[in-house]
Amino acid sequence: MKVLIINPPVRLHAKADILPWGLVYIAQSMLDEGHDVTVLDVNANRWSDEEMMEEISKIDFEVVAIGGIITVYSYLKWVTLEIRKRYPAVPIIAGGFVAAPMPELIFSRTGANIICYGEGDITIKELLKALETGGDLKSVNGLYLKEKEGFIQTPPRQIIKNLDDIPIPKKAYEKFPMEIYLRNGKDSRLLASDWAKNKNIEDLDLTSFTLLSGRGCTHNCTFCYRMIKGMRKFSSDYMIEHITFLKNRYGVNNFIFSDELFVSKPEWVNEFCDKIISNNLNINFRTYARANSISKELLDKMKKAGCFWLSIGFESGSQRMLDSMNKKIDVRKNYEAVGLIKDAGINLTPTFIIGLPGEQEDTLEETREFIQKTGIDEAGTFYATPYPGSMIYDFAIEKGLIKNIDQFIESLDDADRFTINLTDLKDGTLMKYMYLIVCDLKRNKNNRLKKEHPLKGALANLYLGIERFIYTNSFTFGLDGFLRRLKNRGA
Ligand code: B12
Ligand code: SF4
Picture (cartoon, rainbow, N blue to C red):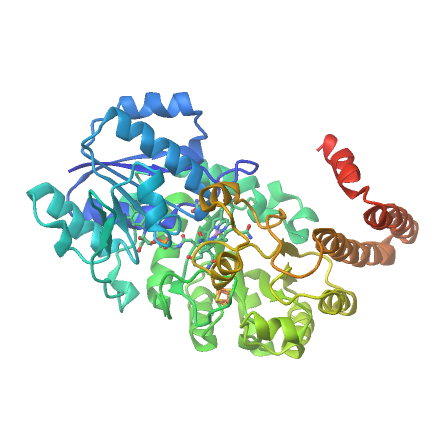
């Protein structure tokens, strides 16, 4: 069949530097079955709506496939309704995180008439076959099908037990604008850590690329959406083959393993690192871990294999909050991890989330204390945001905090933006604490600067102190909104 795959735009403030893996894998499945695939990658090309309609009009297609993360919802809505207007009979299949958790909304507000839930690799093969041969779509597992009235759900699809059965998507890569991803990977936020800022990037000549070493996660935190339970990894041999391919074919030498839980099975990581070393792959990599899965030995091995940067979702300095978000971690382990990672000479950029249900001023103070005591000076700081599919989304619906689901989903963006208050605290209090946490990180950075340049560091702290005084007092007098607007004017 002639299939049009659309990759909608995300994060317009940044360059596209991560391939839409869901679409890449389903493209590979389609190509393996001999279908004729055209990809319109709006995220990479950043086409305007007019340009996109122009691109669509040039293509001959019989079916459309579209998907992505939840923040592509508005675009998915617009583009599928436009396609539906112009090509009323064309099946439009939606999949991924934007579609699977909310079939009612997708069927009622967008032009899609089929949704794939769960893994799409096999489902898409069976679905296209049924569409091509006029077969019964109800016999394909893992689908929601729009009916005249409402929709029906076909039985869930079994997960792919052995991830190595999934082919390395070599053919699919050729269908995506790899040159854009690779170019953006040379100067994007993938390198924007302190580590990179202090070095001459040109000299490093890094070509960065994001890759996943598995699917799923062993945990179930309340703010996280897990479409598929449990965790599977590709074998280390499979990963080495994939890395070698990307290195030889595209010159990639800096990998970002963006699975949230790359370091979940220490034995796997150890074996993987050994193979990077013994195969002389000579790569750098950044990745993610949990504090209870790292050790001095493992970090040393990772460093030797090229790991220069690690992120851990510390989320909170309060044990009460960690328990309530089901993080299943002892805060002392998080404290310990900071020292271990520093000692291994690996950069650390953890993440913190404030405003989860149950957050109080004392728990927020514990998070500040964590940052102050550990000296962390770079972190991702987020407001708890109820993305569909997560437990806190159900909480927000139950509490009646989301009045209009369609509008709410359209408003979703990066979680560093304040969207909704899930706590008993005032909005202003949460924003003030976010500001204080960012100040704590900056002060730690200034203190580090002070060691090398005492005057510069002292002046930076003085400036920070004055700014902090004005800003925190503005909350008391209700001037914070005004100050934020003033601050954002030049941004
Ligand atoms: C890479 C990634 C990103 C990239 C996205 C790049 C891109 N263009 O896709 C970036 C860095 C931009 C990103 C940002 C964010 N992300 Co993110 N991200 C991920 C991550 C780690 C991997 C996604 C992925 O590629 N998975 C691998 C593929 C193979 O799996 P898959 O997408 O599920 O695809 C399979 C099926 O779903 C299906 N399928 C998928 N699409 C389609 C389409 C069709 C037609 C069909 C038939 C089937 C199908 O088949 C695929 C193969 O089996 C996931 C977590 C995870 N490990 O999955 C979070 C995740 C998607 N992100 C999430 C979130 C919350 C965010 C942020 C809001 C975080 C933040 N703190 O700000 C931002 C939003 C940014 C913005 N403004 O848009 C949530 C999404 C929750 C939700 N309900 O949508 C996730 C699930 C994390 C989590 N566990 O909660 N993210
Ligand atoms: S936040 Fe991390 S540890 Fe928790 S469920 Fe999500 S991926 Fe797993």
